[in-house]
Image (cartoon, rainbow, N blue to C red):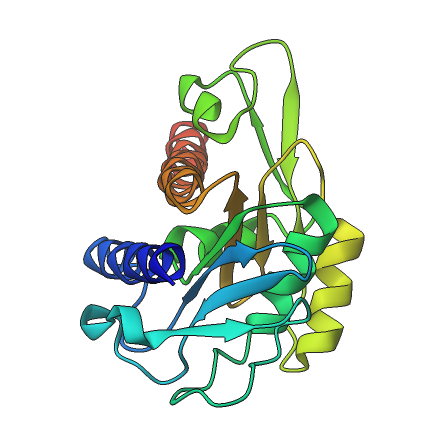
Amino acid sequence: MPMQHGRAAQLAATTRQLYDLGWMRGTSGNVSVVSQQDPRQLLVSASGIAKHATQPEHAVVTDSAGRALDGQAHAPSAEAPVHAAIVDAVGAAAVVHVHAMSSVLSAARWPAGVRLSGLEQMKGLGCSAEGEEYVVPVVRNSQDMADLSRRIRSALDPTMPVILVADHGMYVWGSSLEDAANRTESADWLLQYRLMHDLVVHEQDSR
């Protein structure tokens, strides 16, 4: 299937791009893209593959719940059900999950959610850069993917295509794999800004 192979190649290239940015160390992180509808199927990063070495054959086909279809050489990431839950909840075409340090530190600093407003880079998330405040939700981590999926579903904000998982990383989604990856870059910038701004304000207050 030429279209399926094209999406698999894009998934592999996006994974290597995110690795190069330092957000997918070793085998951590995963990417998914909807490969067909009715019935819905996803392509999801294979489990246990070093991200710098990801190739199109490491894209695993799953059903709408993130379960691998039979007859494939690789198993999907254990977090495939979380990707499937986000796709189902918000109608995303693709989901990116990275372990960016900015997301882990921000979730620790603001466990009730990270507030964002008035920043031009927010347009990269599809948000307004003025006049509105947005909150990036934070949920507790879980090694039970069904439990983590429920937590994420209950915390999702349709106006904010990012959610942080405490002590873990972030999930970002979009209308295409390119859109989700671009939004991940914007999300990292915004979280870094909040952390650095918070540090600067505290230093000024302590003088």
